[in-house]
Image (cartoon, rainbow, N blue to C red; front, side):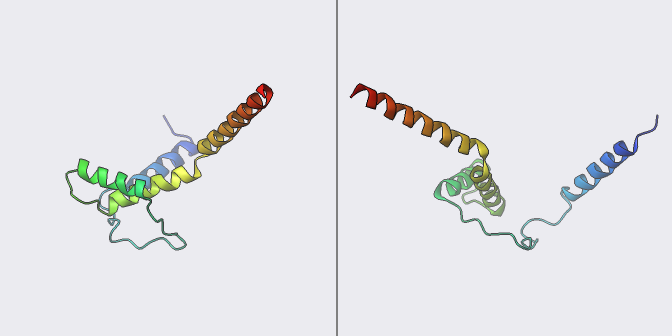
Length: 105
């Protein structure tokens, strides 16, 4: 049973990703920041999330990994298209409310 070239490429890619994400790679505190990467200033809510993760793990204060996770979640919330959709639907609701109150007057 032979694999197709696409199947082989997929297996090679998965093996490379597993090697890249394995625990024997350099830890985040030993790595340099990627070139061109911006700093993310954590909001109060993100700091609270990081602190909550630390407390759940039995630490008093958040470590670098907690902060990195909180920053990633903060960035993903900022880019989230669902929040844009929600804002548009909220705007429609408020304009509908305005129209209904204008009709009553």
